[in-house]
Image 1 (cartoon, one colour):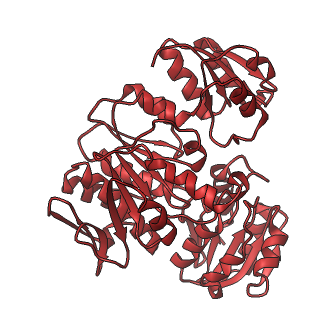
Image 2 (cartoon, rainbow, N blue to C red):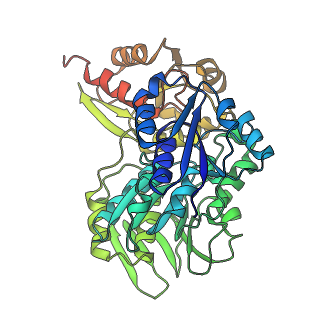
Length: 449
């Protein structure tokens, strides 16, 4: 890709990584953001030292400088004024994901879906770390692809978590292996409906060829509908079905039957994660590694050594016979249902935050009889109560600290406090990580007696 001038929209982690990557390869870079930059002071300083021009408080001044390409940070809607202006100027717009792919030499496995992306990416990254090849876990998991792209070699293995936002602005992005975990109502406020959201996810494999693979969940009808439109190699996995070629559960074992006729087996008990959903997602990660010729022993070692991902059914503490679980990553109803299925003990649920559209009535499709009380916080507290209050006892709390205090008072030995918000964090926190850290700290500060 010949150097020119690039306009980076957004000054967060992805924007910084994209800017520095381009600067390393001879590009002239301008970066703009609607914020005043106070929370990004260190980032701004780093960009300026590296040679970028930075414009804060809006994009107008930056747009007056001609650019050959614009790189859009995740979460910036295509309906925003700055994107429309760039389109009117006929400036190509790509995602940071696309940019990283263009400079990446390694073999990419890209993971998307409504739920389970981060844990599956982390598990696959753990497996890759035992492979003997250079390996990376990047994307929405925390480290942008652009941070490592130009340092990768041809034998490197990359597990990349991919969001629907990023996929809206890819062009030639082509993973060696694409994984579609599931599809449910999520980010409908951003995409404008479920079908548009699902179509964005399906862009993951739109550039694949006969040398690539799509691994997909046969237990999800929405996934099957979209995945079976793929013209090239498909590799199904299922918790309930068996395949001549594919991955499935057989009794208590993971089983993967490969196209060459070989078969991989590993006992489910070696995966240290709760819930059927984690077993199902593990099938996809195991399949990806084996299709990339990672040695079966490396796969087994990776699965057995994986300890889970923070903020996803993470055990924070057991105190006075009560287990406290941090599931802050559960930013939609389906993720909350998965957590509810995984916890069998009587539950005191803490939920609420900023809704994504679609309401909360579908939460009643799960085993809500396990919930003794739901403590509701944030912007959606009243909406959640309206949707589930006829079947679940609800109590409002002023904030997360108040909810933890109330939960501590009403729990009994044998209960589980499950912090599974069902919502985004942006009404009270910058992201789900900050929200989960806050919950973790509040729980740890509870007195021992």
